Each structure stands twice: as C-alpha cells, then as structure tokens.
Image (cartoon, rainbow, N blue to C red; front, side, top):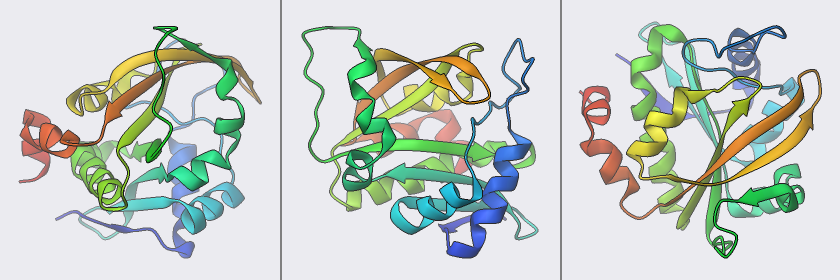
Length: 203
C-alpha cells in the first residue's frame, strides 16, 4: 500500500537520489520512459522542503518512491523562475497571465515501480494548493533538446493548456526550450479524479 505525506528535512537525500535516477543523459536523443529531471542540488531540495509545498510518495516498503514540489506564490515570486519570466514567448501575445493567487508545479518525479501512483501524488499536492488559497497553476515541460512528455497526460487531465514557451541556457545541458502550461485550479482536482488514470490511482 502506498501513501503520501508531507516531506520533512531528512527527506532531501532521498529526493536527490530520485533526481539522479531520473537524470537526463548528456547524449540523450529521446526522453527516458517516465521522463527526467534537470539539475537540483541537495541544498536546493533542502530549501524546497523548507520553503515550498513538497510531498513524498511512499511505496509498499515505506521507502520514498516519488515526490511533488509546488511553489506557493510568495516562493515563486522570489525564485529565479520569476526573474526569467520576461523570456516567455506567449502563444497568444495579447493574453494577460493571471499573477495573483498563483502557484507553480515545480517537480513531479516518481521511480518506475511506483509510476502508476502519479495521479495520487499530484492530487494531494493540488488539493493542498487549493486549500492554501491558490487559484491559478503553472507548469513547464522540456521540449528541446528532447521532449519530456511524461507529465503531459497529467497536465491535460487537469485541464491545463499550453500558453507559451521559454528558451534558456541550462548548466551541463546547454540550450533548453520548455513549454509553459496554465490551468485554473478550481475543479482541477475533480477533473483529474474523474479520469481513468485518477480512478486507477485512488483505488
């Protein structure tokens, strides 16, 4: 039986181990099955646990098999992500992105043996964001140098739509292009729970 709980300071090493297990090989021509994570240090994961909203997924043996990290609005505004928002190329140039009561789904990572529980983990993180008063959700997925589509079915189940792209240089990887997705949070958890993937995860 799996279960989800809030991350604590001592979980940072386990989160880093999962990140390393899901790292993108330097010579990769396609995304590994289940997706990948770009760099984050132990210090970064400690800071995330301390300041953001981080949840961990425990497998049947009680080991951490995945995690979700959501940046609340205050943390997002203080982040490097927010500082780089001028780099975003909006799909609809006249669209005004909501910038109040927003959060950012920073990372969702699950080891292969627990991957079917991704919706359960995402639902927990999403419902916590709603309870904290957030109304708007943003997320990104890498589209270059390889397309990391692992979380795309989940984003679509939430009702998220692509609203733009952002290009940047990433240490150790080079040029990275990411797609930016947006979803109003209201009702997103119900939409996800009603999908076949959500129903399977919550059994």
